[in-house]
Image (cartoon, rainbow, N blue to C red; front, top):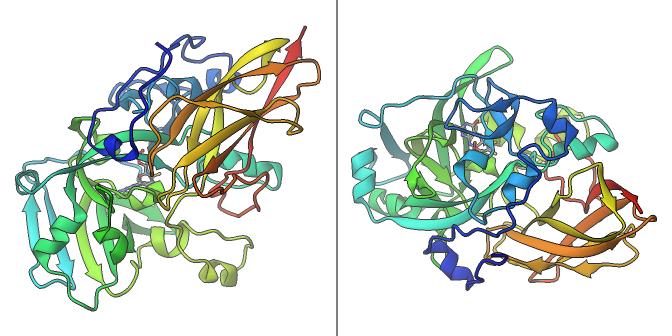
Length: 403
Ligand code: MTE
């Protein structure tokens, strides 16, 4: 089977879209990507099949070929991005989530209280702001986890819409932001504090044609969250960078200010100069940009002259548009061929695509670029930024071609 059925955008929030795209003919888990072979593979936590950047904090991403089999990324291939050295192992029976701040009725809810509230489902792609970070190094080295193109995955999340919780708590008219605070403890510059952040109240209350602006997710792909992904409850904010989807969620605070938490106030910002002024002037990142990557063939693959199957993903920007076109070039951008979209097309969700392109002796690399439903085209180049965030230039995979 080659194709998964294409559905109307809204359908993806309600149906199980776990479908085999077919052709699971990957060259084994590691493929021919020599980088993969030099890294460890985590097998201990939740039977993950990931390439580990660091075990503690746990940061790991799949081999790219493993992203190609399913529109809904299986748990074993879903990247993990954690800032704390310890992954919290929480007792769901004792765990409580509070709603405080500018509300009429502060709440403290157990996991069974949450399960008894109206539930919703959202298929949404989670991607780290640092996905593709290492490509920034071509301009100037960036520190941080050297993510390749695998800090991304698409999941079916279910739980309680944040708007439902806020409705029960009664939001005061002065409220503007909703803060999230976790239990994990992050050490930085001699201080220890929990991971957190905030989103604008409008996003928290939004309903995008049935997709909640934010969800308190209890389940991922139909199962309770694993510890790595935030058990027993996390936020999922469709369209926003992964950092706003706070795992092991303990406190929700309604405020008239954005959260002062380090990860909103200082970390996830686009800073182009290493000065204190540039740092404080930069605002927090919320939505992710349009992006696309080639997952097969992998970098440095040796190809034969002729038709070559090229596969990958494309992500619409997080403002609610959809992907409308994906183009692949095998002649350094002189000509482009439109790829076939093989998956559902929906806001906040990636699409998986495939193209058969001609490669010959002049082919130096394969390039992909995506366009969204407003005509926005992925940029050819992007400005460098210090923290290596939001890299979304045309994705180029160097290859060699033998006749
Ligand atoms: N939540 C907590 N509590 N601690 C974290 O370190 N990392 C964030 C976000 N939520 C993080 C967190 C970041 S940067 C990303 S990209 C996503 O979780 C990754 O989610 P995942 O590990 O489930 O893939």
